Picture 1 (cartoon, one colour):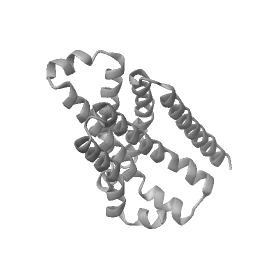
Picture 2: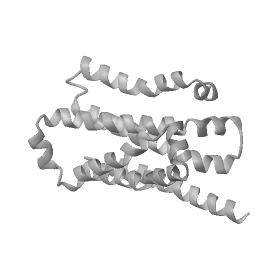
Picture 3: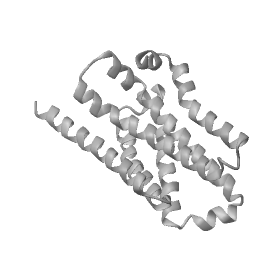
Length: 195
């Protein structure tokens, strides 16, 4: 089923959009139960989960080797990354809507947790814009170098989350999981170079 989903790009995007649609429906239909806090939190969570899924594909490919499911995941890695950015942009839009005025937004920018969020979003913008075949062809080797921005962006994502969370334990747990994913990637890539 996952393989079929990965092969059908429009269906994949529909599935990726479902959490946002569900959360929007909940916010509209039950605003007292599902308000701003839930909406901004859930959009941020989906951004993180999709970022982690995107970053897990390389170590998965290195561990599992070639296969149809891993190949399909690798082909859709950019889609998952763009979806992660879309949820981050939604997260930002909800924040901006809640703040209401440019003066309030500007006043909060120097705060470390807010500044980390803005820098993260700024790092994700060029990644999202260049996550297409035309950019890969045009940038050539520079495309890989540019997309290494995902690593500082991921670190800043967790800095933002830890500093803004009411209970940062979940943020630390997710950060530890991403660190394990990245450690596995580094070890597997070094092992591959040696052999």
